Image (cartoon, rainbow, N blue to C red; front, side, top):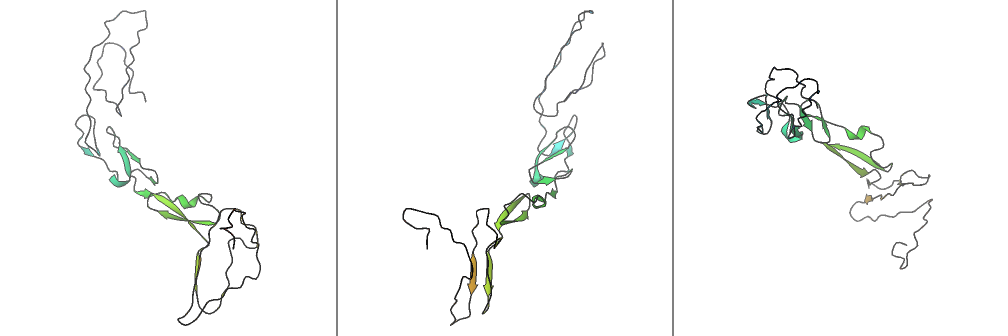
Length: 179
């Protein structure tokens, strides 16, 4: 970012970078002779979450836990991933992106992040019910692990009868994935 261009004999006021680097380019035009310049370099670091042109006395408005950096010149907040707004206080809802998780997963927004969890885990209790896998009877296109928990009353047992299904099994040397 260009901080300034200076011509003539007037001396500019204090020039301060917005970060830890400053590049100075001196360019003469070749038609006029001048003496050039001399100056003093001083690196000053504002305390965390303070800013200001000279003294670094202004507190940044950033929410500290959600902010990677506060600009030491103007107090602008640079948010950690998952946060937005001028003060980094607004959680980005990554789950608004319909493709953030697999089709077989449900997106759960968390502060500053998200989680993808299996959408086919079900818990059943009672004497009867039906269960089916994701997308049944269509083909399951993604890797999926579905966990079904069926709870019966004390002294009862649970039976399960598969009515329809396609159980094309992986072929393994020791059949450890087959029934």
